[in-house]
Amino acid sequence: MSGYTYTTIALEPGTAPRVSVSVYPDERARVSYFPPVIDTRAFLSVQHGDTGVFIGLTSDTVVSDTHVRFARELFESAARFLADCERLRDEHADHVEQVDQVPDQATPGKAA
Image (cartoon, rainbow, N blue to C red; front, side):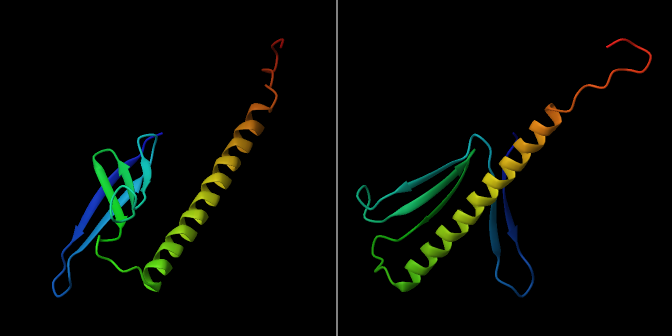
């Protein structure tokens, strides 16, 4: 498995700069949740190699419906991502299993 992570900074005339972080995980990727018990805010951490992405609340944030809506969208998107990963893994496993079950064809003119 080969994952990678990269950051893109887009600077275009007349527009605000955009920064994007793309994470294509492998076995080095980690996702962690830090509850507000340890800190005065809750946050998620996505780590891959030397790259980290953090999603959280500032310590003085009053949690509003906007925060809850964002968290729900994040949860629902992650659940769909999980479902697709599991489906694709299972489809791959089924394909590998089918290929492994194909009987070897004897070479014509030679004994098997």
